[in-house]
Image (tube, rainbow, N blue to C red; front, side, top):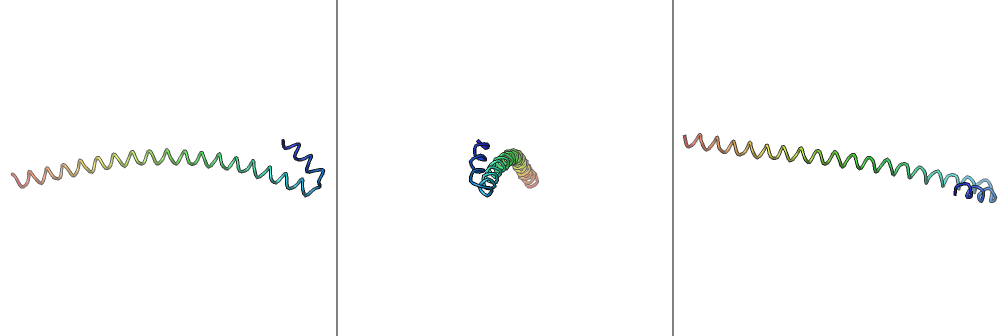
Length: 79
């Protein structure tokens, strides 16, 4: 595909050939950047999932501490 585009552009002059080269370069560069972006997004989603899991553990611990505090206060005033 690139070869035929270069041949066509070469017939129309240097500026056309440079335009086609730049166009193809931008396409390939965009594909590369898109792949890297998708990889970064996947890594970030993994980090977010791990953080949410840890937050759930902390919330469970917070609830347990609150229950213990309520029980200690109840025993202090009942005893």
